[in-house]
Length: 111
Length: 114
Image 1 (cartoon, each protein chain N blue to C red):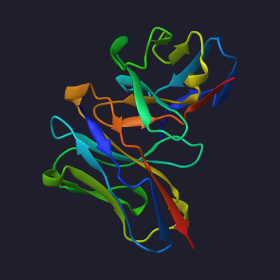
Image 2: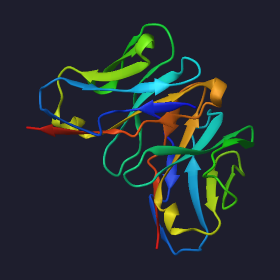
Image 3: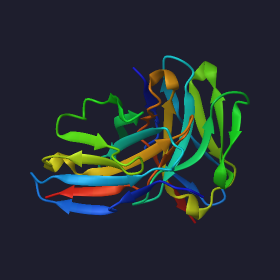
């Protein structure tokens, strides 16, 4: 069964450093998303991506964040200058018509 | 604004007992409704979904959920809980009219005692 793959599973980074989280969605998905879950809190929408551009972003998704799908396969989330409060589990999701399939997540720890 | 309420933060049930996890939503239209399960340190696994039609939907692992439009609810049920069901359960809503993104509830942590 195809699945959404995220790498790395866990990343530790120093405050102020740039990080890139990677995702390989299921090939026939049309919509792509990043969500975030701070420890002990609910899953929050960050950004949606459709037809090679951002279709919607939340207020969390400020200028420090960017997304790309450079090669039609990988879908990346970049955080330019990480802050302590960026520590969270980041989930990538892909969606065909209706339901979203999530990856296993990347746990980002900013120290 | 769209929102999802899961009123129970923690629930503890005995193995073999029945389970009901509550979910209420506030949404502009009748949304698509989902239940996801998350085991510790793991990703989100889709248990079941409702789009239209029969309001009682069956999912994986013996779970079912019932959509009640009049109550804006989508409660998750299982007749007999197994120890392996211990996890966190998230109700989520979405709709193409609202960009397909999912709005999640805060989650309910299920503990199963033997």
